[in-house]
Image 1 (tube, rainbow, N blue to C red):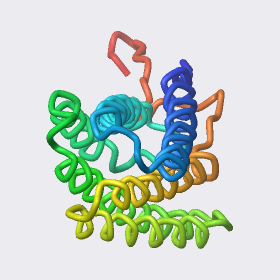
Image 2: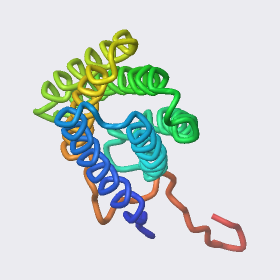
Image 3: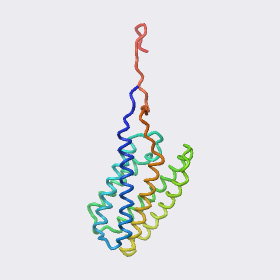
Image 4: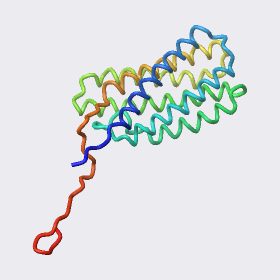
Length: 202
């Protein structure tokens, strides 16, 4: 029986980890340097959202064993790419939009991760409660980013930093704890070979 290729799963998992670490790094940078240019913030956020959207789509179509971390990534990955392109082409004059768009994305991701935590509990993953806790915290911070987007740019930059940091930690822990790559994973639909017995196909 032909085994399923694990390459897409590896790409998705490594991509998730790399993007999560970059989100954490960007969050720390924005917290430490609240006076950073809004144009730079816009470009960074736009590029990050596009690449993370691509990684999410790869994850969705990779069909990993548990189907937990990537199960909502078709819709969410597409949304992130659309928002990322919008932000990237208007980085300077869309700071409020950037925060609202990112806040909504992260709020939705937090809600999706709550569902993933519940599914993880049914799968017997012991750390499901930590995914749930991180998802709730991240969702709440996303809400603050949405409603506080009209504050001063420095305060907004710090809040944006905390939001990115929380999102990075949430995604990093989720993908490490729920994505299991098995080398001998079989396809979803088994290919049954036909053969003839007494002139009849079986």
